[in-house]
Structures are given as C-alpha cells and as structure tokens.
Length: 634
Image (cartoon, rainbow, N blue to C red; front, side, top):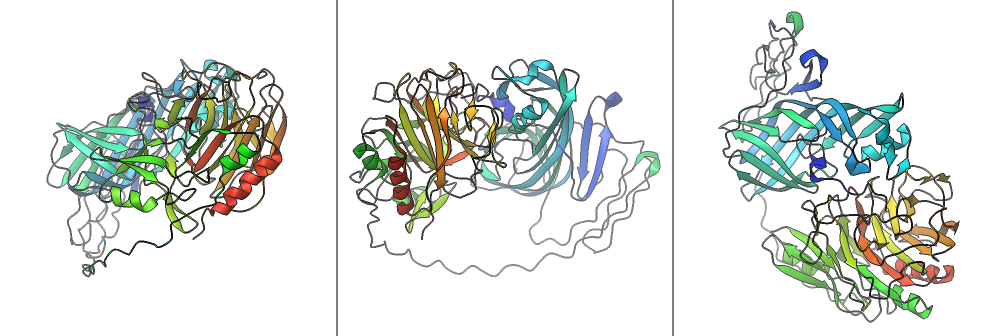
C-alpha cells in the first residue's frame, strides 16, 4: 500500500473549518490578523460587550443590544473546574480558533508542517447519561487556510499536483479541500460540516459512545480514538475546551443545561458590534411541549425460528478447490465459505471483557447473528478476531490485540455498527472505521510469495467508503512496513485518487500493489472501471506475479461479473515481491507499535485468498454462489 496509510494519534485532534452558527455569527480577527476566530451564540451574547438577552419563553423577541463594543475579542480558554456533566446541554456559544501548523506526514508527506489559520463553530446539544454513555447531537463547522511548500507535494515518493493533494488531505476529516498553485507550492482552503465529535474534526466522528472524567478532564471515546477536553460543569453551565494540538486549538464551547419540561427558551441576545451596531433578538420559543404518554409494556421474547439457516452445500472455497485454486484463507462474519464448515466465524468481546465466538447455524450455513444480539444486549461489543475457515490457521486478529500488538491508536471494530439480512437471517458485517485493522503473518501457510500467482475476492459495500488509505484485503508485508513496489497484492475499494481512478466519483475496485493503488496499470482514469454504488459489491483481483493482473466486479446481490481491467502490471512492479501477511481494513504499513493507524473506512462481509491464477469461469461460478447466498434478501 502507499506509505501514507499511517497517521499519528494526534492527527485526529481538531482541524478548523467553516462557521455556520445556528442563530447568529461573529467572526473576529485575532492579533494583527495572525489567525481567524469563529464565535457563535445560540442564546446569550458573545464574550465582550454584548446586547441584552431577549425575554425568556414569552414569544417576544429579545431586545437588540445597545452595543458599545469595539469589535470581537480573542477566543479564550475558560478555567477548568471538573464537576458533574450528567444531563442534556444546549450549546449557547462557541469560540474556537486554530493556529500553529498542520502536520501532513500522516498522509504521506513526511516533514510537511503547513502553517495554518482557521476557526470552528459548534451548535446543537450534548447529553451525558448516567450509565457512562453520551449522545452528541452537535454540528461542528468552520474553515481552515494553509500553505503547502514544494516538499508537501511528494506523496509516498510520488510527485502529485495541487489538485491531486487536495483529495488526499481531505481524508483527515475535511468536508472539502481546494488547493491551487502558488509558486512551487500550493495555497489551500478547507471546510467541514461534521455531526458529532463536538468541536474536534475527526476522520470518524461519533454521535454516541462512552465518556469518562478524571479531575478537570472529560474524555469522549469515539471511532477515531479518544477526544479530550478541559471542562468546568456548574449547576446550569458546562464549558468545554478541546485539547487539540495538530493544529493548536484555543477557545471554548459554552453549553447551558436543559431543564425537563421548561418553558420556551430565551430570545437570542443582541451582539455589541463594532462601532455600536447590534443585532435584534429573535422571537422566544413557545412554551414546553406536553409530556409524552407512558410506554406500553414490552411483549415477551419471540420463539426461536424453526429453520436451521443452512446455506448452499457448496461454498466459494469448494468452487476454487475443484478448479485447482485452493483457499489459503477464508474469512466472513456472514456465512460459511465451505459447504462442510460449521465452526467459528468471528469473536465478539463485551465491555466487561467477556468474549463469545459466533458460529454458523448449520454446516455451510449462515452466521448466528441472534446469538450476538443476546450476548451484546445492554452492553457494547467489538470484533476481536475473524477466524480462518480454510484450515490454515490464518485468523485475523485486530491490530492492537495481544496476538497482534499495535499502535496506541489501533482499536477493534464495533460489532454492532451494521446488521443485514442474508436469506432471511440477521447477521453483522465487519464495519471498518479509522483505527480498525486486522492482520496475520500467513507466510508459512502456503500463501503466494514473491512472484507466485494468486487470486482473491471480497464482498464489500459501495455505501461505506472514503479516500483514506487504504481499505484493503489481501497479501501484505510481514514487517508492516512499506517495502517497495510489488510488496503487496491486495484488493482495495475506495475513492482514493493519488494513482489514477475509475469512472465517476468512486469508490472503485482497485489493486493495492504497494507504492500505488491502481485502477489499471497506469495513473490515468480507467473509464471501464465504474463507480460501485450497490450496497453489496463483489470485488475480485488476480495477479500472475510477472506479467498480468485483472480487476473484476459486480453487484453481490444480483448480476454477473464484469472485467474492469486485464493486462500488464504497472512498470516497475514486475516481478511481484509478495511477502505473505494478510491485512484487512488498512494498508500494509499499518499499525505497528510506535506507529499510527489507518485513515480508511469500509465494510467487509466475506472474502477468500487462493493460490494460482483462477480462470474467469471459476470466478463467474463464485459470483453465482455469492448471489445465491441472498445478500439483502428477507
């Protein structure tokens, strides 16, 4: 995979972007124009000389401020004091500024620190529950401006244009990035419009998860790692200061506690504007809504289904084996991939540290998703390992586990992010977000090494993807380092654009061959490689190791395979130099101890890796078997 897979944990801290406050907006220039500040207010004036607050809940607008202010003030960190955060809090104002530099080494530009200016604004509500969970219904918006030196335009040892680097930087969590040439470098503007992860721009923002408190620090767990805040919670007010360092974050978010059944909120305060201008308050809200009627009692549990959930007596590995291409790895959270397999598919772990193996309902059958529901009821669960069904022992443990030590930011995927129906049975996917990756050293199990031929497929989704590096499944480096062109041979489904693309906006079925993710054998657009928009996508890669590789794909719930590319390997990638590890969810140079973690997202349902160079007819038969499995069928 390209060498910009890894990024340090601090990359997931705040990145400033476009302000869009819900009720009123104040943008203030800080000392001599060094950086910008976003100041928003929902129900009270900004800090500085402000107008009067409107009458509370009367339906009459608040009066405008008389405004003797001389302009906006800098965003200031409010003093932390700790306290109890339990309850629902409404953002009343926010003033967050970003400055210093933005480190772009995580996207493959080592040594690139871009000078940055920007601001963030936050609206919405945040709820801390008594059970240690939270609901984050905020939206963080803003903008950021930074300058790239010429050294920043070399990504994974490959020169890129300002336009090309825009898409790569966007994976850090931006809604949009536009970079234009400026001398030998670029000037860039970025925006964000992010639900969740209050005040902290993230590659995988969370709207619900767990929280903890220690002293004056509040920690919110999310899919991209922990976000930390200095905080002060008093009877009716909560102040949060994000502890972002890349870039530096200053300022605070002020929230007011919501009272259950209270009347209408106060009118919006007028602001003291420059030269005494002011804004009139908005109308107060109407009185509180009527209480809800009581919830009826729950019915008893449904009886167990009578059917055993058996699948086809033949699985993809049976088809490959009969064609002389035996499976050396077979992984799925959805079903057995051999007609005789009745063992473990994957393992889940709950918040108490207990684990449970999820089995098939019958030999060759569907996963017992209801057993996961029973085990995970009332708690949170993660997927610790996806078991190998081939008999070769190539179980994929999450990077960061005891079996596969990883970086401090590497975490297992949530087990309950996505459920689906396969032939009428509820099952779960392996739903990969940033920081989630699975790995095994399979080099002694018979997997293809060096220039030996191999094939592989996976069933994935065209609905959950990004342009981050790199959502892969396949052959990768045993040392978890980027070891040069041809050191990997893995399927990729993403919208990454650094080494060429398919048609449309993606995602595309591509091959990660290390030092490049290819839609064909060059970095041009392959119009024969379409964007994959189906909920369930079959992606296929085969590589003879010396002269040819092929990419094929289809809707996994219906249809026949199409060939998107079949031809020569890229120049410099022949012969292949495969090492024999297997990676799922990230690129090959991820996520070892002391390193960072992946930026990629994607969905994995099933996949196999085989020896030899399968024929198109063999792959067509595998596709027919996948369609018969009944993805999305009730």
